[in-house]
Image 1 (cartoon, rainbow, N blue to C red):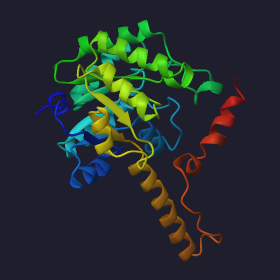
Image 2 (image 1 turned 180 degrees about the vertical axis):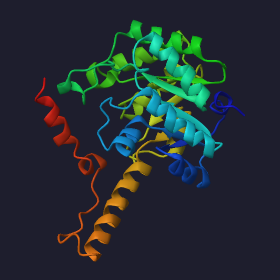
Image 3 (image 1 turned 30 degrees about the vertical axis):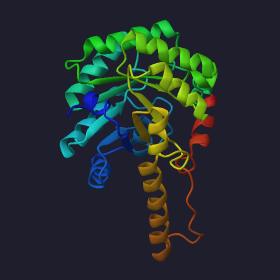
Length: 279
């Protein structure tokens, strides 16, 4: 069964975020049908930097290729903004498809931001995003490769604009839609009603305990992402283990730090502040 067909089934497809072959293998062995190759997790694990657009398309493709070589599960990969204009989108789709992606997620965030707005979510015009969606659909070699269209408009333009964009993405032919930032159950329900079984709906659970897949199913969601559990757990447990080892060897004299969010571990705030000096 291909991913597009699987998304039409009654049960919600749950995907855990992964960032290398080992994390993908662990997720598959735990019983997950799908994994999400998260751009932020790749930035954290491969670069030790925040998710601000530093990861390139070829770096993502390289990780995808190694993961596909090890697992047989469905793989949805984060393509950010497509890494540029419509020509870049088409190259991205072809490259990711060859590397083994079953689904490719493209968002409407502005591709290049000023250094002081790298953590913000400005979006491109709806018309421009529609062009990217159509370019992606045209570039894929198999019509079973799912093109998922994501909007971040909720953060800058509000919920209504986000839902309007979802409708526009459906009209453009997207295989799945994703409105990031929806928190109220009624807004999630409204999104599902807009889709009205025309296309599957994806929902992102940065907080794993916020809502269950069963509850999402009742709201009309087809796919649920848990993008941060693996990378956060790896960073926190790895940090504790390394500090514990160093302390036992007499290399570190302080107290072992408690578990902290990944952005604290990789010093995101300090890294961004240094960059702001040049703007």
